[in-house]
Amino acid sequence: MPRYPSLSHATQGLTTRVYTGLLGLAQAHAKEVFALNVGDTYLLPPDSARAEALHCADLPQLHNYAEVRGEPVLLDAITKDLAGRGRPVPRERIQVTSGATSGLDLVCRTLLSAGDEAIVLAPFWPLIRGVISAAGARPVELPFFTELHKPDFDLERALETALTPRTAALYLNTPHNPTGVILDQAQLDAVARFVTRHDLWLFCDEAYDQLFFERAPPPPIWTRPDMAERCVVAHTMSKNYAMAGARIGFVHGPLAVIDALSGLQTFATYCAPKPMQIGAAHALSEQGPQRFPRLVAAEYAQAAQVTSQTLRLPRPVSGPFLFFDTRPFLAPHETSQQWLERCARAGVVLTPGSATGQAYEHYARLCYTCVEPAALVRAIGVLSTIARDPSGHPE
Image (cartoon, rainbow, N blue to C red; front, top):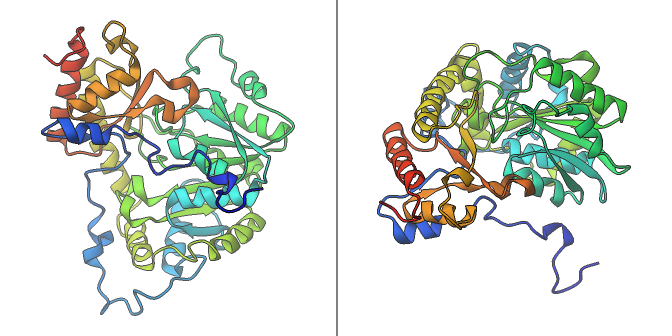
């Protein structure tokens, strides 16, 4: 048990520099820096959702506290939006949060106890490992999304290998960060059988649910009647509506879970920022069904095409990321970390694959949506030059 001057065990391994320490290297060496390591966007939100569209004269008490559960206008918009996705969710089963990160943190603290384990399908969103650890639980990494295409990969058998008597939950993200993979119906069926067979919670991260480029994904697993009391689902306005800085997300699930989660939020952030909740309500209500997210997806599909074609890599089918094995690009005797440092000195900052799982130290994640298209072309040009150089030095 820690005592002064020691810190809580839950803080061990947590840092504000989750993604990379390469940015400083780029800033010290390059004239132009392309920070392609964080999943942000160059796009602006819908007009009605922007901060400048919110006026105190039109919105009394705009800067007062919001209701803990969420502003009624936003809860109404969320219920309508969710009903359009395949299953109505009553307002009392919804909690507005400060982004999906806060939402998933609250989910983990509500449903995981010290010593519990949660299976995390790797590679994964870099923050989920720390979110689970901060709740006192242990993330169990399972190489998964890079294995699905292999003919001898048995999804259910793989899940069974990660199971222990302490397993309490499975974290699922599809469409997926960072690979862009979308699980098909048969794969979702297998996940449902696994969590049901072992009485596990299913944490569904739906951050990229509308950012697919071609065929629409199958219905989300949380819309299945047999999953209604097992799934706790996190959504965000950050990705579909280009509102990352607004910090608005929402969680829905079984009533008892949401009641407990709401109580936790009271003692954490109390409420999500009220002005941004109003903006989020405008975004959901005034754009028509999926209109703005589909525009975002079309923009991202073009960026994905440019990036993958230039680097001669397969194009992702969803989301803002290209996840790739760096080994084909390495100079003789060069490690993946050294290659990332070489890219940084040339001005391009990528996320080391190790941030997405212990098995992915040779990989890198590139966000092709966080800079404008012209800047992306310049950044990918720099990477392409480095990739063609077998000497380890810029041409």
